[in-house]
Structures are given as C-alpha cells and as structure tokens.
Amino acid sequence: MTASEATTKRVLLAKPRGYCAGVDRAVITVEKALEKYGPPVYVRKEIVHNRHVVDTLRERGVIFVEETSEVPEGALVVFSAHGVSPAVHTEAEERNLRTIDATCPLVTKVHKEVNRFDREDYDILLIGHEGHEEVEGTSGEAPDRVQLVDTAEDVDQVQVRDPEKVVWLSQTTLSVDETMERVDQLKERFPNLADPPSDDICYATSNRQVAVKEMAPECDLVIVVGSKNSSNSKRLVEVALQAGATKAYLVDYANEVDESWLDGVSTVGVTSGASVPDVLVMELLEWLSERGWADVEEVTTANEKIAFALPREIRDARERSSVR
Ligand code: 0CG
Ligand code: SF4
Image (cartoon, rainbow, N blue to C red; front, top):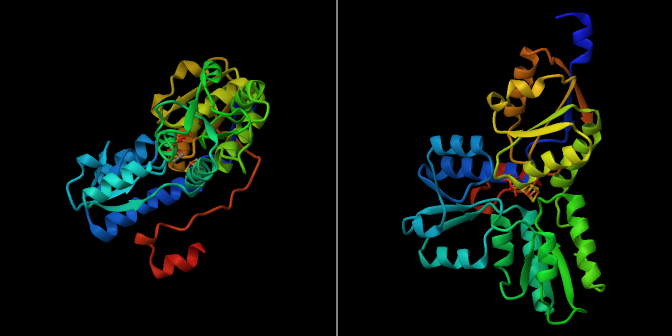
C-alpha cells in the first residue's frame, strides 16, 4: 500500500453504538436463567432482534417460540426485551408457566403511560411500526383506546372521540426526526394534541442516531451492523443517508459486505444497533483493515453509563449490590 492510499482510506467509528442497557439486561437474564434452571429455557419471540445473539443462545439450549401456547405446561418462559401485552401474561398464568419478564424498563414506562392516559379517558395515538412486537405489547395495554400511526396516511385515518383529549406516545426505537414530522402532521389535525410526559424514544436509540449524524456527512459509505428485523438498526441506515452519507447498508456479519460497496470509497463509517454485540463490529473492522481501511477514528457524541437491575427471579445478593 502506498502512503497516499493509507491517508485516504479511513474508518470513522461511531460511539455510542451497540448494546444498550435494556438489551444487556435481557441477554444476561436468559444466560442466568440457563445457568440457574438448566436447559431448556423457553423464550417468547427473539429475546432481542439480533441473529447472532439468538443463534448463540439457541446453541446453549434456549428454545425460541412465537407464542406461549407452544411452551409446555409448567415450563419456564422468558418474555423478550420488547415487552408483552397483559393478555400474554394472562395466557401464561392460565398455562401455569413460570415466567421471567425481560421487558426493558423503558418499554414498561411507555406501557404505564398508556395505562395512565387510558384511565384519564384519552384517545392514544401510538406512533410506531405496524407488526413490531413492541407496539403489539404496548397497544395491548388498552386495545380499545390505542390507534397505531405508522405512515403519513395513517394520520388522516385516525378517528378520535374528543379532539381535545388526545395524546401521542411512541415506540422506543423510531427515527427521532421522522417521529417529530409525524407529530407535526398530527398536530395539524389535532391542535391540542398532548405530548408524552417524557421522551418515549429511548436514550440509546437517540444517542446512536446523533452519533451517526455526526459522522455521516464525511462518509462515502456507512455500514451499520444489525439485523433486518431490528427497528433501531434499520433507522441508523436511514439516518445516515439523510445526514449525507453517499451509501449506507445494514449487515449482520462482516462477510455480508459486498466488496463493490468499497469502490471509490475513502471514508467508511461504522456503527451498530442497540442489540448488536461489539464483537461483530470488531470483526467488521478487521475485515476492513485487511482491505486497507486500517486507520480507525472514534467519533464520540455521548458516554452512556446507564444500567438496569436484573429481574428479581435471577438476581442474587452479589448482583443486587453491584447493579444498584
Ligand atoms: O430496535 P428493535 O425494537 O427492533 O429491537 P432490538 O432488539 O434490535 O434492539 C433494542 C431492543 C430490545
Ligand atoms: Fe430499552 Fe431502548 Fe434498549 Fe429498547 S433500545 S431495550 S427501549 S434501552
């Protein structure tokens, strides 16, 4: 490699990236459940939306199911980080399942907001992606009161009982900018639309978007490590493109990168979704380094220190003191 090539090929590495506190807690919960109770441990839906995490846990004895009805009577089932509706808890009780709830506390917070506005007799407009597990769980707290707003067309479709008593809430893993656009559209229809008591889009989602926005204008290519069903990871690709990256792609593994993406590229931006183990990012950096992109500069826009206590079923005395 010539000196001039070395100076023109560089990698910008976003920070924060990768695991958030809710994902860390959910993955540790399943690992501890395996340790404490032994396999098989059932998990309803993917514990987090990452192929590598799911495949690794499956190899260790986790059985992933779509619904609690697939779990044998009396067995142990973990609920995923994205949350479940009260109906799922009821079904698990009826089947005498032992349950551990790995729902992220920041998702639970949105469930509680739904309960509160339902009690106060509001119509609730939940901004989120149709079919995503989190919105299914959140809507399930008050199915008669919650309407999903996904696309701009949905804004025109919603019908409320009293336009003076409407609140918007959201999925935790949306694009911050796109959500605010949707809110502005909703406010054109409902000028007195109430805002959520605090941000529903979580710190991890918004921090990862801020970091990618910072580096994207300098990038000819942004590679986001994450799975295709991971909402927050997919949003990072969109945000990178909107913020000025020439190209942006989502990959589960380094070996999915198409070498042609690197044609004519000088600066490669790298980041990862909130459900992505950092080892996968390190493998991508290694892959890029083998092709001449060995100069890595971290672009830091926040330092995250947040951690959540584990569910009580798998907390032991030592862990209790370390996490509090
Ligand atoms: O981003 P979503 O909500 O699809 O989930 P993922 O598992 O990828 O990461 C955060 C969580 C839980
Ligand atoms: Fe919780 Fe946010 Fe992580 Fe989802 S992305 S698990 S809401 S911290």
